[in-house]
Amino acid sequence: MIPRQALTIAVALLLGSCAKSGGVTLTVWAMGAEGAAIGQLIPAFEKANPDIHVDVEQIPFTEAHQKLLTGFAGGSLPDMAQLGNSWLPEFEALSALQPLDDRVAQTPVIDPADYFPGIWDASRIDGQLYGVPWYVDTRLLFYRRDLLKRVGFDHPPKDWAEWRRQMIAIKHLVGPGRYAALLPLNEYEPLEVLGLQQAEPMVTADAHGNFESPGFRRALAFYLETIRSGLAPAVANTEIANLWDQFDRGDFSFYITGPWQLGEFARRIPPARQAEWSTAPMPGPDGPGTSNAGGSSLVIFRKSEHQEAAWKLIAYLSRPAIELQFHRLTGDLPPRRSAWRAPELAGDPKAQAFAVQLRRVEPTPKVPEWEAIATMMRTVTEAAAHNRMPVDAVAAELDRRADAILAKRRWMLAREKTATVSGGAGRS
Image (cartoon, rainbow, N blue to C red; front, side):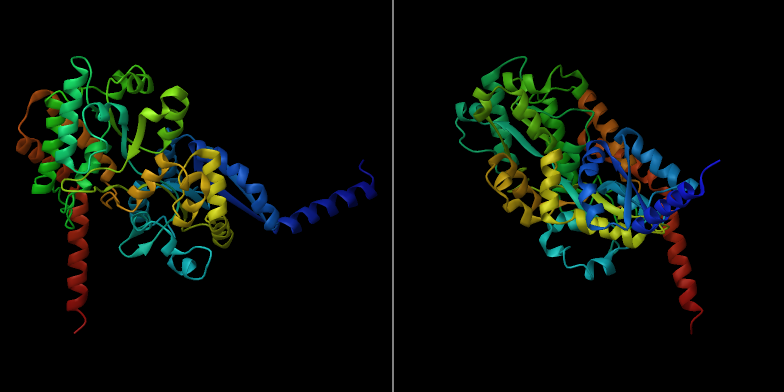
């Protein structure tokens, strides 16, 4: 039997613990390396907010999308989560996300003007904000500056025409078995980036594929001709034995990739040859080019019972000083321009290429089906790289398949339009 005095002390300790926490346990889902790193930022937040306990669940990226959908279907989503920018439209369409404009307006520490505009816009859908950018990535050129110099260029490409001349010159230099560029056929992002550089959207406002537009056909022709002419190998990245060694050997000189590779290239290429490679913003058809507004945002789920606590954590993680701490833990790039004035970023030319590119980024089409469309785009263009299908026929096939994926969206838009018209007609 437990002595009365011991029982009294235990109850007092329990009540004291509850009073300290305020009964608020904030559940957070985060993915990959970010899920591990956020745990190192939480103790300082909990110390400043003793009434909030944060419970972080780390989820592998390969499982995250399905777990989020399962959580929505089963009513078991957390209070807040890290959500990839390309996933936002899907979960907004499910009415799973809480709009955040009013909270931002009341929170001076989160200044929209301090964010890269294209990144901030990626979290806006139909004029409403559904996420606060947490970290950013975008794709640009990693290139061999020494090989460019050997073929007479002292700068990376400024537009597609110059890029093509550089690739032809490098291919002539390196000879058979080596290439000027690597555009892995199992990655849709390089073509996606080229498509974002065009004036016309890849998906129209009335939910049709727009791959037969003049701009995308131009991008598709440039992409396919680079591979078909032998300037880039017709291979998947799984067929590359060692990306960094082969880049170091000069097997290819241009590679479109993101900031997660900065640390890998720095570690895996010998120190004596670090000056031989660099990074550069994407060239566009006729000048500086756009790239994709990648990365993740922090979101609050609509059914959360702890939205105030969730917003406090978002505001804390959005401070420039905390973003820099997060950058040191993960290598992820901060979305706020003021954070880029820190010496570790301002003094790194290879990172600064990303700062330049982040001023010219565009979100991918804001439709829930974009992931499926992009995967389809990869499948079709991978086949086209091998079978010499004419560019116009490839574009038509992309439109045909995209329209099939978007059929339900067109039906929903038609119903919304009918309901609006009927409602208006009834209010005479």
